[in-house]
Length: 179
Image (cartoon, rainbow, N blue to C red; front, side, top):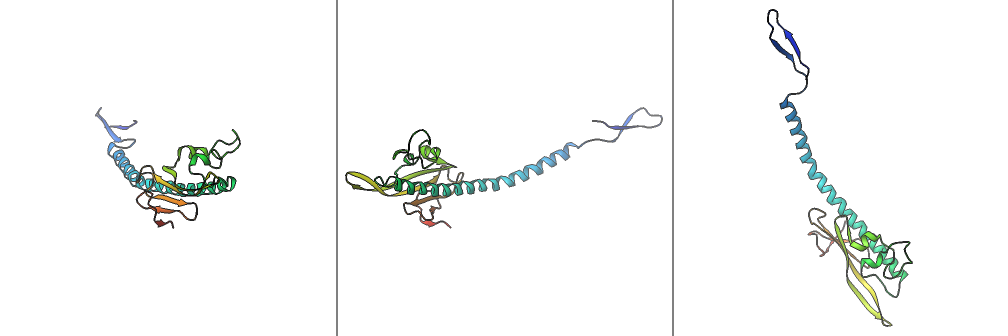
């Protein structure tokens, strides 16, 4: 640190006239202000992340519902798929089949996990036609892996599509219309 010094006439002692830089107190005040601003922003960022995960879950439900409609029209003897793996499969490795229809991104289809939500196809309703089981109905659910951190609400839809319903507690008891 460079300091300007002044020599008084007749005295050889140095006297500090003007220091360069900031004092320790000034630096601590600036750091404290930055920390306060960061703490205020963290709550906002957390709620924005939860909202983004919920929007992603709703969009994924719509994508899976569309894949179910395509599956039903492609494999009418089978009806709907009763698991996500049947909707997945790696494109280009082989031809689509009823057990790997290649209609859904394989990451989502194989793990059932995306953006902090776990997706499942449940409550499959089937009828037997000519000795073959045909799935005529299903329920599709998306629940947060860590409620309050990855999402606050659980979402559900069924073979009729439409707007998904939600469970405000993060479960699968979807009774409220999504607005």
